[in-house]
Amino acid sequence: MNSSTTAPAPPVTRIEPKNAGFLRDLTSVAYRALRAIPRDPAAVIPALIIPLFFFVVNIGALESVAEGIGVEDFRAFQLPVAIVFAVTGVSRASDLVTDISSGYFDRLLLTPMSRTALLLGLMVADLVLVMALCVPVLILGFLVGVEFATGVLGAVVFVLIAGLWGLAFTGFPYAIALRTGSPAAVNSSFLLFFPFAFLTTSFLPLEALTGWLAAIADYNPITYLLASLRSLLSEGWVWADLWPGLLAILIVGALSFTLAFGALRGRVSRG
Amino acid sequence: MASSDTAISAEGVERRFGNLAAVDGVSLEVKTGEIYGFLGPNGAGKSTLTRVLCTLLKPSAGRASVAGYDVETQPGEVRLRAGVALQEAALDDKQTGAEMLSLQGRFYGLSAKATKARVDQLITLVDIGDALDRRIGTYSGGMKRRLDLALALVHDPQVLFLDEPTTGLDPVSRAKVWQEVRRLDEDLGMTVFLTTQYLEEADELADRVGIINQGKLVAEGSPAELKREIGTDVVIVTVDGDPVKARETLESLSMVERIEANGPSLTLSVSDGPSAISPIAVALAQVPEIDVVELSLRRPSLDDVFLSVTGEHIADSSSFMASPSGPQNAQESK
Image 1 (cartoon, each protein chain N blue to C red):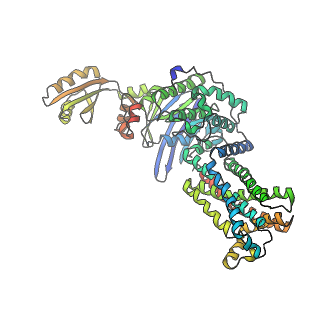
Image 2: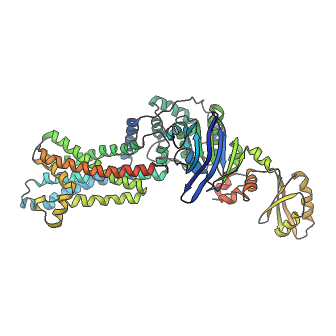
Image 3: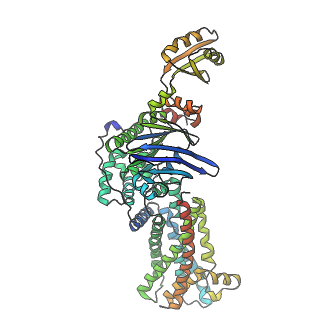
């Protein structure tokens, strides 16, 4: 710290800065976000524990009831639910809010980097993270005897679909983060998860739901996502079961990304 | 139209937030290689103009260019050529200093090798030793400010914007920043636009100073020119007794042009300080209710310039102590 002990600064040579390009901006943002994850494990541990907890509890509490109403393999029925719990709402939105409040977001805006990469890079990091979060849930599923009718490739597609759903959902917390810049608001965005995750076929098949819950479940995209994932486990490659789930991801993704990138435009506009 | 040796040009720049004009028709020109000190109290519009010039905000009216590129229509070109250290050190506590410098280099298209070479050059400035590989969350305030400055320099900018770069720094760190700013200017001809509320900093560093108050540029010139324009010396009188009586006595003296009272202390503007000292002392000695505790003469400061153009001290405007010992006392008085 004492300047008197510091060696004279070396001569500085001139260099030519340039635009790094979209892909490099994207990977730079994603790499930075991924690097931060193990440094703040407390932010990820709940996303790891909650799905495992619900998987075990739901099987313990409801397996015999479900089998009584005709669900053949309740463990396979519950595995997609645990996966959806693992991947829904997991995002770097809290980190983004921290960047906004610390001023680092402004520092990024002072560089020539792509504004789209600034958000999309975080989403790429989210995709990697949520797919990684699927692994321990899958391992627990295998340990309790769940098998894939579609084999190893089916398991890969299963994780991929789950990851895409997680990605589609991340737009909501990012939209809130960019609109409000408020950590509390971002934390509250977790509430969005509940209607999506519980007003659906989380515990019982669609045929067993009645009244208003059945009506809502019909419109809940997770109903179709769960059906797709369950078909990979129990039915094999059934396109008729897969495409509604992919369409649900597409619709939710289009909505959430529109909101998120609209919020990004508002945040980076200099007006 | 800005000429080719103009690094920064602003023509009638306004920036409004609703009905409030934070920057109100500022026009200025900074030559290439110049250190321009933008001096003003808190809330005067310094940071807002800086944010306009470095493309974070669009001007509501007027035009501005940096390194020859329009800040409104060519922001990408400006960003490649401008380095910016904003008022608060904008860092990511979860990264190490080395990681942040490397990431910053990537955003400016530098190869890993070029970034490493550049980081090696900047290590002297950062001067945080092995801490460069520690997470920034563990850094002191001074270390963060120095790293922030290094980040602004990673891409070797033509124009460097420093928004209150030494606020919060200890005297040693402050001297180091001043030394580095001078070196960048002298060795590389880098243009520096420096906002400050520290009179001493503007006086020490700036080739030219612009004084901003309530969004308007109220004076501009080299520190020496600005002080010369006042054309007066300053006599400080501190009395024990009735300061109103002392003021009345001093107002009767022809060489006293203006008096500012602050408790028992009176600041007198006089045309010829050395000649005025004796008559002032004699006049006060003839008033029995007053004892003179201090009588001193000094040359005008930038605060006196600010006083002459705005009618108030910069210290009053910014709730800072513009003491002769400079920003250190100011910092403590916050």
